[in-house]
Amino acid sequence: MIEGVATTFVGALSFFILPEGPTATRGYLRFAGYLTERQELIAITRLIRDDPSKADPSKRIVPKADVWRAVKSPRIWPNLLIGFFGLLPSTPIGGFAPLILKMLGFNGLKANLMTIPGFLLGLAVMSLVSYSSDKHNERAFHGAAATFYYACCVAGLALLPLDTDKVNLYICLIFAMGGSTCWHPVNAAWIAGNTAPVGKRTIALAMYIISVNLTAIAGANVFRNNDAPRFITGMWVLFGSLLITISLFIFQRYHLLYINRKRALATKTWTTEDWKHYDETTTDVGDDRLDFVFQV
Image 1 (cartoon, one colour):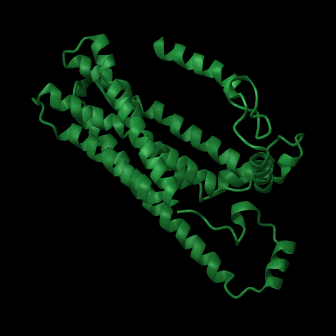
Image 2: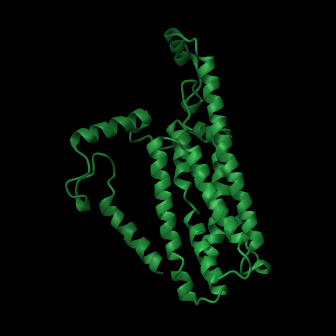
Image 3: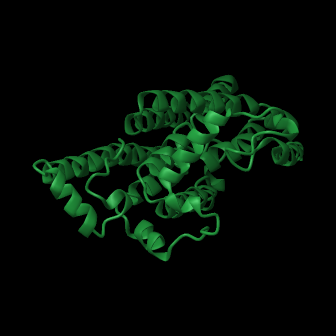
């Protein structure tokens, strides 16, 4: 209830804080605005360059062709699988953490309050990984390293002796919660940066949201009653899903590097006239174009 009230309050506040666009940052709780006139012009120019259709407010429908391009793109699906396998542990570990603590002898209120440090640690780790990934413009190794940290925490929970001290178990549980979504923004940014045009990107991100929400269905069935209260078998299942996630991060990196090299080799000897002819005759759009370079 407390979390729900806080969410409702922030949601209502957003109507007065979030602007409609670059030219509407003044007023309400935004006061004098976030951008100068020059910054507004730069922002609008970048938006229209990214998606020329935004120059016409009446065009708000994603073309059917972009939907099909997103669904059949082999470059998007590895990121979707990363979302599914990587977030699979978040539901059982985060959701069952109060239950695990309650089974260890803590009362209901105390068990719920004791999970707060795990979520705060998760926010800190996620912010650090996201900042570093953005600063170095690198996605795959950041995601793999963050997932490796998470996998080590989950393995630690599985390897602790059954008669281990409650304090040790609690510390391991908090560190595991701290890694539950630490790579998530990195993967979402990876998809967004590597998918074009905007219609295809919109559908790709919607597919990603579907993939990560499916984990709640699968993850809720990992911890079984006959495995309580430590859920050792379930922990090893989650550890396996994280190993798959690490493999997918590495695979996607070299998959995209291979495509970049292949395109660079194919156009290595092209002249200005060759590129002009390509622009005039090609049916490739967005990230299917030979001059599109994927981020890794």
